[in-house]
Length: 462
Ligand SMILES: Cc1cc2nc3c(=O)[nH]c(=O)nc-3n(C[C@H](O)[C@H](O)[C@H](O)COP(=O)(O)OP(=O)(O)OC[C@H]3O[C@@H](n4cnc5c(N)ncnc54)[C@H](O)[C@@H]3O)c2cc1C
Image 1: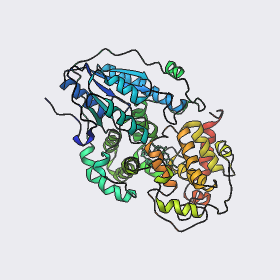
Image 2: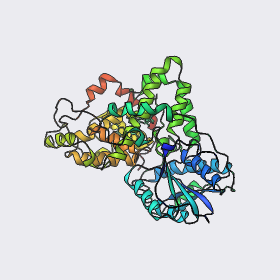
Image 3: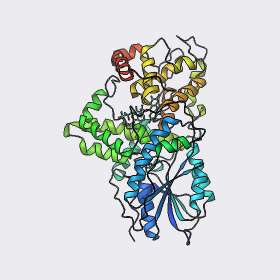
Image 4: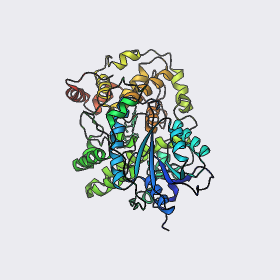
């Protein structure tokens, strides 16, 4: 029998149960890696099903109670799942959506399975679902880590303090994990299920937060759209990305983060395609792109996996929390209520444009995200409340919100993975950002015009 097509370091067996001899199928409980192409959990599941001479079922749990998710996120996700179901069907793999709590759906679907495969989740609810499944299942649960380039524990067993400490650890392993994933032939194909009805499913989700409108005018979900966008990005060239990435009035960015968040595209595939496409004079740009896609992104996964409180104020470095609290009573240039911020009614046109970009499109340029976050910290009287506020906005409006990178990056605003800087009012030794700095380094007025142009005629969603 052939070996599994995935690197053994991507695989973790979560319990000690044995394969059920009367199992009717192998189950892949899909949660994080919502794609058919370049999905290590799926290819491992096909391999295990073939080995056991069984068909493969893929089940996805749909619950309106998903932490912090709203209609905007659900629509994007379901568009992607409709495509994934089609892609799986062509390979003889049946995809089913089951309503209910993810752990309960997975356990129910596991009852008649010989073996369960799942992808990996890093944030507390995702880990809890997998623990419940592993404890309750009467067959083995095999977890496959396919949404990072280097498996998190291979890179590091501890919380890293900054990119500079994680980088050498990641780069050491990069070539081992940046490689093609062969598609496995499905030995026992099943007939595909019916086409997924996105609108119908959205209406069945009672209790869904419908206060934030979908953004299909700006982003359509799905692996095909992710590939199409990325190919367009590569055609414009990595050198163009390097030149434009700190200039938010340009659109020289990949916009892959929503697709990565929903697992609609593989980071390994993105890195391999970028490597293939980079010209001889673009090697520097390629390395800068991999620095973001692999090092910065996987630093956030390191934080989610190894910090005991990755989503909480308490998970931020002690020095940063202390200095912010010491400066809590400092006078501030302005203090805004949550409503004023939400409605982009501050004195700062750059910040207002960033907030509007986020609310209307579900995306915000990275350079503006940094400024946007630093200003919320500055304009909120209590740093801990500022942390909660920033995350509330981030996770409510951004398509890529609620991701390990959300907490890693908002954490950066509050000193995570950064170092102390010369002390200033309000921020203490946490790095600050000013409108003057923005004006010196880029062209925020042009950014305001870009956002105004993009949103012309649109009513504010939600
Ligand atoms: C306050 C704040 C909040 C943020 N919230 C989120 C969030 O909720 N979800 C999210 O995915 N990212 C978040 N980021 C990180 C970053 O801004 C986005 O990943 C990036 O802007 C996505 O756009 P892109 O795909 O066009 O990036 P590109 O410039 O094309 O970069 C390619 C990929 O590299 C990774 N990447 C780029 N910049 C960063 C970064 N600073 N940190 C980690 N990975 C990075 C992303 O996976 C991105 O898709 C936040 C940053 C800040 C400062």
